[in-house]
Every structure is written in structure tokens, then in C-alpha cells.
Amino acid sequence: MIFPFKKPLFIFLFSLFSLQISAQKEQLSSDESAQPFFKNGEAQIVAAFSQAKDWIRHDLWVETEFDSDADGKLDRMHVSVTRPAQTENGDLKLPIIYNTSPYFCGVAEDVDGLFWQVNHELGEIGPERVHPEVKARINRPVISNAHVAKWVPRGFIVVHSASPGTGLSEGAPTVGGDNESLAPKAVIEWSGG
Image 1 (cartoon, rainbow, N blue to C red):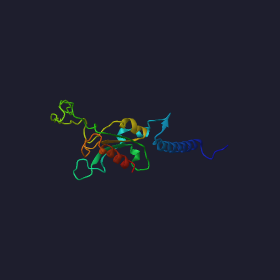
Image 2 (cartoon, one colour):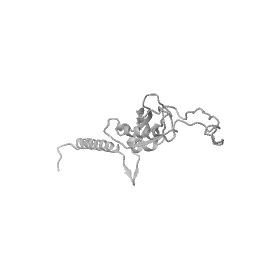
Image 3 (cartoon, rainbow, N blue to C red):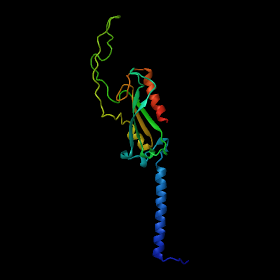
Image 4 (cartoon, rainbow, N blue to C red):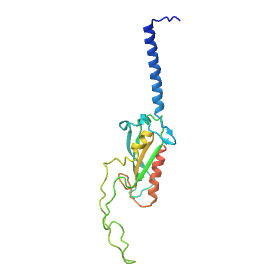
């Protein structure tokens, strides 16, 4: 068979065409690789999501439906979000790992008089309790980095919130109060769009 091209020109054009096909395949595979994938039921690290410098981090406040500190305004929960950059344009939707806690921003030291003293006669008022200062364990406004390094590279968005009255969240902290379940409910509803 006789080719109308000289051999070096044919090789050059064929190589150029092959490079173009390879580049298109690489572009396609890189777009496809910006998706979470699972092997044996476990989320795998996705190279496109694994560069921490490319992650998008937000600090924001989500309004609740309660006013636990009675200041006349609905309480707002401090929320931090860490997500892969590929979610920025809104085309890529990813699942969310959500964690909330009253303990992210520090707790009081265990000092004498912190807890209610039960060793007193019935009907008498026990000794006054102490109120030690809570020392922050982290540099605010970061709530927590728990789960971020594990789940963002696997194609998840990680959301943390500080409980009412803790960290930078508004309101009054309670133990077992309705606001303890209504605050995460507000963040979950917000995260669903």
C-alpha cells in the first residue's frame, strides 16, 4: 500500500492525533475521577479530592427555631463546612458527614464544687457551685477538624456545628433540653437545601 505522505510526516501526524486522543481520554477520566467510588462497600480515596489546599472551607451561622437565651432573637448555630473544590459550581453533589457537639470548643476543668453537692440534709440548700472559666482548646473560628482528613478525600462534605451556647453558637447550653435536638435539626435541614 502506498501512502500519499512521506514517512516522517505521516509519523508526526499520527503521533499528534494519538496525543490528542490521549489528552481527551485523560480529560474524560479526570472528570470521571471527580466522583466518589466504593470498593467492597467502602469509600475509596479519590485523587481529585485529596489535596487539602484545594478544599473549600466555610464558617457560617444557621438560624434555629428557638431562643434559648431569651434575648428576643432566634439562636444561630456556628457551623463549619469543608468540601472538595469540585463542588463549587454546583454540578457535583456529594453526601455529608455531620457532627455536632458541645465539647468542640473546650470544657470546664473538673474542680471541687463544679457539680451539685448531694451530701446535705433534705430541704436545705447545698453549697454554692463554682463556675470555672472554659479555656478554648482550638483557635476559633475552627470548630473541629475531626473527620475532615478521612472523609473529604473520599468524596464527602464534612459539616461540624457547636451546640447552643458553646463555642461561637448563640443561645444557652442545656442538658437534654429541646434546643439540644432542635439545633442539629436546623443544621440538617439547612444542609439539605
